[in-house]
Length: 121
Figure (spheres, one colour):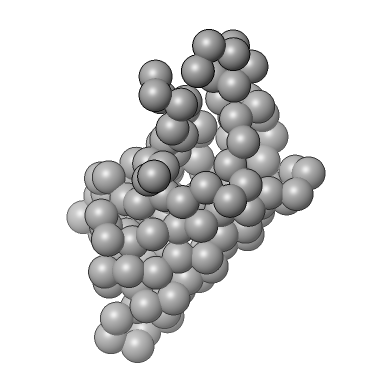
């Protein structure tokens, strides 16, 4: 992509893009087989996700420039529920894909961490 605006993480399009976990802290449940489908309408963002340790999950929040702020909730593979909050910084990779650098905290149990989620094609 030669278009500088397309490379700008503040304006990178995330609506309809699919992502998977690349790395996560030990306390996290998202892995490489967890797939997220993101949506955006104005500053509102939401996604559904599933795979690996997560049977079904949802997140909802807002976007300001290159930052996503959201709450998440999911049903894990054992039937337990969990939820928390996350702040993600958007990076646009050289090939045009989008990567999220995340800092998260459980609200339903103890634990915090960081993760990387990257667009899949």
